[in-house]
Length: 321
Ligand SMILES: Cc1cc2nc3c(=O)[nH]c(=O)nc-3n(C[C@H](O)[C@H](O)[C@H](O)COP(=O)(O)OP(=O)(O)OC[C@H]3O[C@@H](n4cnc5c(N)ncnc54)[C@H](O)[C@@H]3O)c2cc1C
Image (cartoon, rainbow, N blue to C red; front, side, top):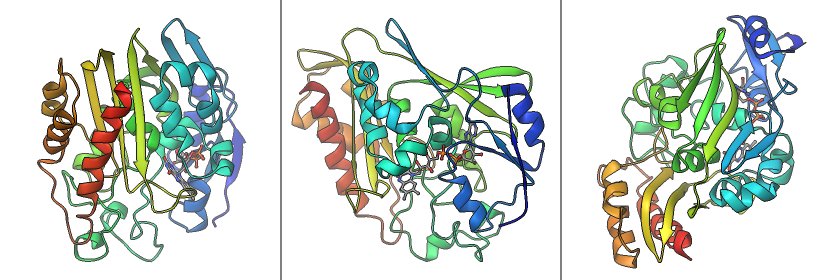
């Protein structure tokens, strides 16, 4: 690990100034410290952002939820109002890693975490994500990799929260210079679709402040994932859904797949197909086909297709259960 300075930011504006061009924000450290130990990142300054005012609480204002970037995943999973209003989000948080990880990992860090691709994580491999010229997963081991990508990198987005928040149509409030900007989840990851070296669309110095989302009356949400191990593991495929449900009829539907693309994977046609329909096994199957229509399995990740189909059906069924 390289030598670095350690400072604690007192305000969001000063955090970016302290990080400058060669520093990193430190939240729970679950991802960042691993990358530093592997010499994948060599920041000159670590800027502790964990205690920034206004970033450590969940506030519920009617059906509006404001979730600070430094709320831990354990707190998110256990929050009684979030479990009631947006159960899909609490379920996604509860599935992350292990209790030890959830006790430290934060919402902002989970959204901004870097690729888990084993080629990217190997200190001696100069892959596309590190500015090299080849995606080694394409000719090599692609078991955990994407079914969809817009660029030469096959590394998928593995943040559980990104998938649940995309289904909930949440907004990510980001401090960018002296201004704050509001991003959809699609915008937060759009750059990773087109740019192999990008993990997300955040620019150097961009600081996630909070998440905002609305839980409309009658709205339901659900999240499911399948992993190789029941604990301490990422999803092979995950699925989140949100909709208003009236007598098993869905409106305002959003269904999203995770760990299959560098972005939360949504297909407008699948959402539109479900709109106003009574959910049956057949409609759920058809939605899954629409979501997976453009899938391009490579090498040994085709097993993700039947898992994704099953998760889409089960997650939708969970909405109406
Ligand atoms: C064994 C294991 C299993 C795991 N399983 C899962 C899983 O199943 N699902 C899942 O989603 N994750 C999983 N993770 C990843 C884990 O959830 C993330 O590492 C963690 O959420 C990162 O949060 P953190 O607060 O520790 O971030 P840090 O490690 O402190 O930061 C991570 C990155 O985010 C940046 N960052 C931090 N806060 C902000 C902010 N407010 N604004 C902008 N950038 C910021 C940092 O600079 C850094 O680049 C697993 C991790 C491990 C080690």
